[in-house]
Length: 187
Image (cartoon, rainbow, N blue to C red; front, side, top):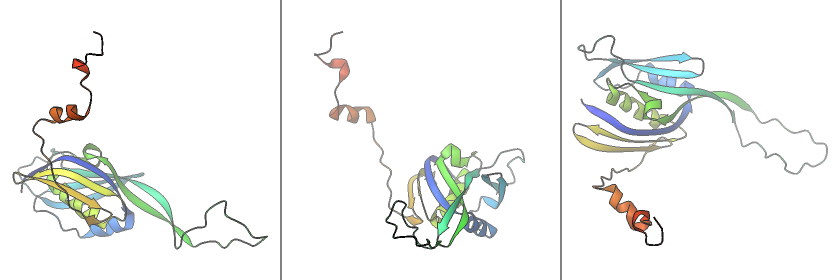
C-alpha cells in the first residue's frame, strides 16, 4: 500500500478514555504492525511501528500528536450567569465531572509527523476522527496514484472532492482589479 498526505487540517476532540480504548485493539493498515501511545505532560504521541523490515530502526516512522485538555462535562445544561434570581433560594448544584480530552488540532506537520508509513497513520487518524464527538478532519491525500479528499465532521464521513485548477492566477484576476495595468494609477 502506497500513499501520501498532501494537506491535512484537524480540529478533532474526543475523550481520552475513548482514544485509549480504541488503541487497545485497533484495526491497523497492513503497513503498520502496532501503535504505541506515550503521554508527556499534556502531550500525546501515537507512534507507528512499521511492518516493513527494510526500514532502518533509526528511520522515524509516522506519529500522531495531540494535546490533552480537561473539560467539565455537565449531565444537563448549566444555568446561564446573570439570569433572574428569586429570593434567597439555594442554587442546586448540577452534577458534573472533569473529563480529559485528546485534541488533534492543527495542520499536517502539527498532527501527522514524519513520512515513513505516513499514509497508514493517516488511516488510523481517520478511524479516530470517526470516534470523535467534536471537530472536523479535512485532507487531500494520494493512494495508489489517485487523489482522495477526506472530510469527517463530528464523527461522520461527509462528501468531499478535490478540485484541480489549471492556472489559479488567471481566475483570481477576473473578479479583482488589475493594479499593474490600471490607467488611474501614476507610475
